Every structure is written in structure tokens, then in C-alpha cells.
Image 1: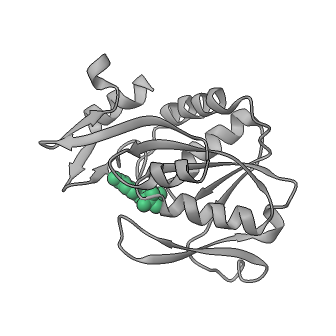
Image 2: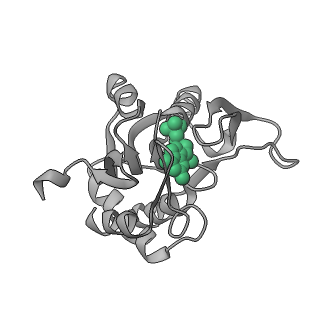
Length: 194
Ligand code: 5GP
């Protein structure tokens, strides 16, 4: 998605070897118009699927997931990383190792928001080693729901996530695919062909 790639080029900051900071349009400040265009793009990519629900993880997956939900006209459920007084019982849970924070979190979704009738599209902000998506897939399995595909805003193809999902036969569509970080600059997968 050209608009997203341009935004990453202009506003993304490469941190160390393998982290991209995009906190002025996605991870802290959010650009609603760009999010809306992402929602339209996810809809275009998955329009042949019968989606009844979109699943993501708090907090940075929520903005693109809600925009996709708006266009698919389906509810969006975000897995929570912390148990609260109001989220205690009847939960589906999975352990997720966080790539950026280097800690394990338990993510949870209330059983009342996912059922065996659901056809689910997972949406997340980044695909790195695939742990967050795998945690959501465990929850979808536990609910006996059907996974229809995975939509990712920014995929880093040099990490293991894509391979893991391909091996599991999961359809993955990413709006921007990063091949490498070179001298602090982002290189996209199809850049050579432009
Ligand atoms: P994974 O579970 O695929 O290893 O990592 C995905 C999660 O880690 C995403 O939900 C995202 O929150 C975070 N993440 C992974 N890589 C990056 C990155 O380069 N930049 C930012 N901002 N977050 C990342």
C-alpha cells in the first residue's frame, strides 16, 4: 500500500537492528484517515471471505482493526493483556511473548465474544516472530471458531512470523512488507521493481 509505505519512509524511525518506531501515525498518535484507508485495503484483500468478526490485541491493533470492522460491518474484539475486575471469568487465554517488551503476557478474550459460528479475520499492527498472531490463533481454536485470514499493517519479512503462518496454511496479507533495515533506512520487499 503505497500511502503507508510513504508514511513509513517519512515518519518511521529504525531502532537498533530490527524495530521500527511508528508512533506518530500508528502506535501512539493515530492518523484516522490513514487507518480508514487501511480498513478499505483489508476489506479489498479479504472481500471474498465470509468474515463475521475481527480479532486483534490491545492496544496498537485496535485502530486498524476497528476501521476494517467498520467497512466489513462486523464487530471487533481485542484481546486484553491484563485481567481486570470486569474480565475475570469465562475467558479464553493464551501466552504471548512480546517481541518489543521481551516479556510474556497472558492475553484474554471473554468467551461471550467468540463462538464456533464465527469466521475470524485477525488484524495486527506488526508481524515479527508471529507470537501475537499465534496466541490469537490458539484462542480461535479453543473457541472452535474458523480462522479466515490474517491482515497485518507492517510485516518484517526478515523475522520468523510469516514462515510460521505459511507453514500452518494461514492466508496472510500485509499492507507494507519490509525486507530489511539498511543504514537506518527501511527497504521494502518490492522496492527494486518500482
Ligand atoms: P510478534 O508477536 O509477531 O513477534 O510481534 C508482533 C507484536 O510485537 C506486534 O503486535 C507489535 O506490538 C510488536 N512489534 C513487533 N515488531 C515491532 C516493531 O518493529 N515496531 C513496533 N512498534 N512494534 C513491534
